[in-house]
Amino acid sequence: MHSYSTDNDRWKIYLYLGAIAFAASLGSGWIVQRLLGKYEIAMGSLSFAFTSLVVYRLFATRIWNWEIIRKAGLVAVPDFNGKWKGHLYTSYEDAEPSRTAEIEHEGLTPMEATVTISQTWDEILVYLEGPDSPSESEGATILVEGQWPTLTYNYDNPGRPHHDEINSHYGTTMLDYNPEEDSFSGIYYTGPDRGNTGRLELKRVEK
Image (cartoon, rainbow, N blue to C red; front, top):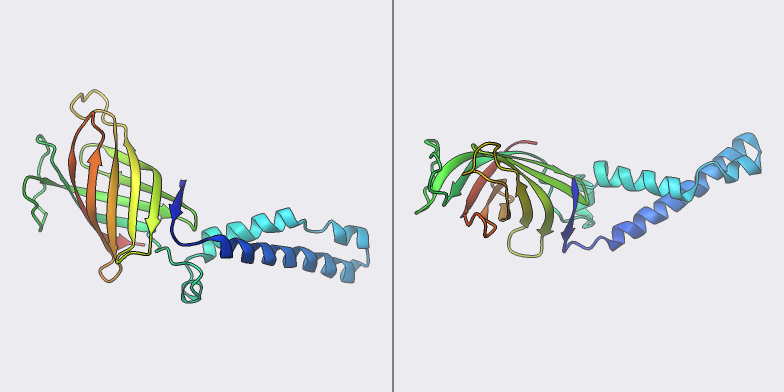
């Protein structure tokens, strides 16, 4: 996984987590002193650095997407975790079309695609399984201030060994998220060495 940027301010969260870690560090020392009566052990029971790490990891991986956190207005970034299925519509001329696509885009060939997203409060990984070769995100941005939340990511596709027509390449995908339908739709384009463009239409099938 890699970090992602967002327009949802995180500084308040860092302050709250720091305050909780500080209180936990002091509280653990007080409890040890009350139970054992040894000040020296109490002072070294739980360091602030250790409690900060524990509190941060708990929030970033377990707590950040709780409904109560969202209702409190602390986190606005959507939780994209899960498996998404749909179609990739490509301008690649030799692509083999899928027969299950319900939507057509002029000049583009539909291909079945599955995307798996792993996400925490500050990290994400977008893995796309296409019919020809997989791709994996290397950097991402999630914006929440517009009409729709958007996920933009840069990806790397290693291509397929021994297939010169499906060579290694990189590209960018920009997706709009519809919370009512729990779906993504948007565009992608590859680097100039490949020169393909297209669309992605996805719906979450598993969290």
